[in-house]
Length: 204
Image 1: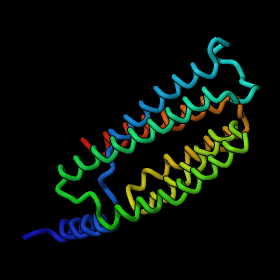
Image 2 (image 1 turned 90 degrees about the vertical axis):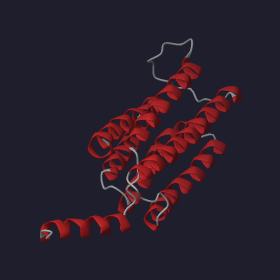
Image 3 (image 1 turned 60 degrees about the horizontal axis):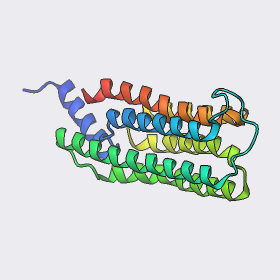
Image 4 (image 1 turned 180 degrees about the vertical axis):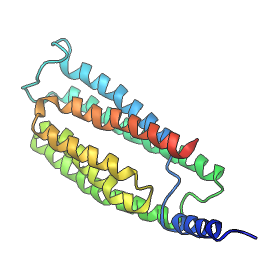
């Protein structure tokens, strides 16, 4: 005969699976952070070389060649990160005998997309108006808001990453000359730290 505590734990687990998206992979966060750091290193070379690598950048990035390379690098990081997250989440769902695209998963994606899409159009407007120096803080702020919004439908740990991204984006707005460094910290270092914690907590 099963103990009441075990039955309650099973009921709680079933309810959690029905209301929360639990297939997020910690390893995908680590890899996404690695991709971002590689791209940030490439971008740093394009922007600063041959100037001193740690100086404060006071001029705007206006040359078309550099802007084009930065946009291509950002698009590639986004595409590869999404693909990695989908593949690893699918593998995790198969390992745990659960479905990937559950109603909870759809709600999670929808919650993420609202701030991300709005933020994307806002950053495009900044780009065309020439306010490129504000784009890095804006991406961090809207990404943080997306994570906080999506945390209602997945593991609650993700909201702490969102708070860190949000705080880093606001801080970055006060130091626009170091936008790329803040961007690397937010999308690179924080993702690796968060992904490592999630991997050891849930994926092993």
